[in-house]
Amino acid sequence: MSPFLALTGPTAVGKTVLALEIAERLDAEIVSVDSRQIYRGLDIGTAKPTAEQLARVPHHFVDEREVLDPINAGQFAREAHERIEAILNRGRVPLAVGGSTLYLTALVHGLAELPPVPEAIAAEVTSEASTLEGREALLNELTMADPQAAATLDASKTHRLARLVGVLRAAHTPPSRAWSAAPTPRHAFKVVVLNRPRDVLYKRIEQRVDAMFENGLLDENRQLLERGVPREARAMRTIGYQEPQAFLAGELTEARMVELMKRNSRRYAKRQLTWFRRYPEYDWMDAETVSPADLLALLSASE
Image 1: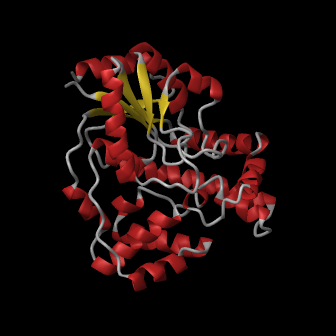
Image 2: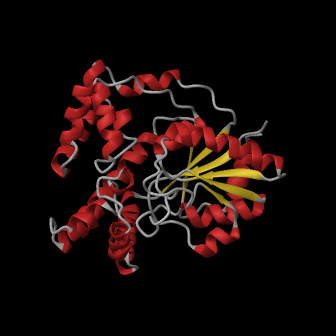
């Protein structure tokens, strides 16, 4: 079977609009490869597609779970391949879209389970990850020992960060080595990475952060707290929620909150790009100039 298209790239590069145009041309259904857009109530901070955009093309893994009902990359990949079978049975085609590197890896390449971590070490790294400074120290530790694993996350992804550092300390081996034993995925993908010049991308990121606050990001975070979602929830320990919640708790000034969110977003984009570069078979395209026709031609050439 010919490969399906997977459209990825760093945060704020411009995947959503292009993906909708391609999906309409292919009569496709979009399989979201985003680890946070799956959660209801996480809308502004995840740059979730609007109601109008969701109505244009069927989407999978958007608004499907409650924040306290987490899903991991392995679960996502298994469910995604099942959805793809259902899409094909309907006579349509799947279009994978999103920039969550670990989810993309699980879907396209398969993902092996990480080895268990002793309780004492797990408790140790979890405690260290309970503060912003501790999370950054853990990320630096992981980056020095295993840059491939570090590229799959940022310092705000507390649970996954603690898990990887726990494996590193317990096994004294890079966690990413386990991924070489990943199972073969059921479907093949042609992965296209959208990119922009670094200065342009960073400007887009900062403009997006400003727009998120203008569109009510703080109110979204307040509503989550009012619903009883704890700050410690895995989905809340991510960019767009960690910083506003620290501000609402009186731990940050407003200016520092915005500064940290922009900085964390830029760092995350850099790590995403580092991760994509480890796969020489991925095709890179300029998001400023690429057209749906370009992507369709690339897909046709790979058949």
